[in-house]
Image (cartoon, rainbow, N blue to C red):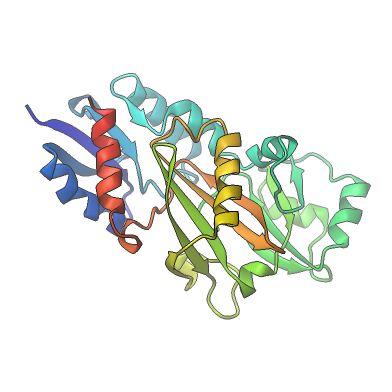
Length: 287
């Protein structure tokens, strides 16, 4: 009897991304029947042997609804990445935890919703030439702004923009514009491939939605060593089906931007053999 797997998407992308479509023939060849399913449209997930979160790119817009669906679905069938991992990763305050573990991140002030921004934090922020402001729970650069230190709104306006939700204020890393951001992809806890993402001219966001580009990238031995060290430090990576570590190189050192464990684009079409490896990892989880 064939195993059945659901590759989770959202209503805005009913056929999934290219990476998911590349998986379908690989899984079929391995005797696995794969379906691309909108998480919010289907109800009977118990008919699947495995549910894999892939392009659920509206999860941040439907916070509690998505969490309730995730927890309910996990009672009926195995979900990957797992519930604990998703709950940890959905709030970007995890970066503060990783910073305490010795991982270098962009200088960041973490604002807990309506909590006050302390004078020393404002002094730190005002010393930055460019400042990025983003929600703690977001995807695809949702409600992400770039200001310089002269146009940065005051505290009340920032909180108004974030509608009382927790948010991050970060120093902008200019190498994002000049060198781009590298995504290191891990499958079953092992390094698979890397991609270089660049923003469009005049923008700072590397996502395709804003004109950003992505190309295959050969990481240097030093970069890979640093990325692997980050992966080894983040306790969720080793047990996860997939992970994407986004980082920017500055003076030879990687600065971690994000660890993506929920719904990252994995760029399977940019590196030879990656769709096959991902399919093998999925099949291995179903034995």
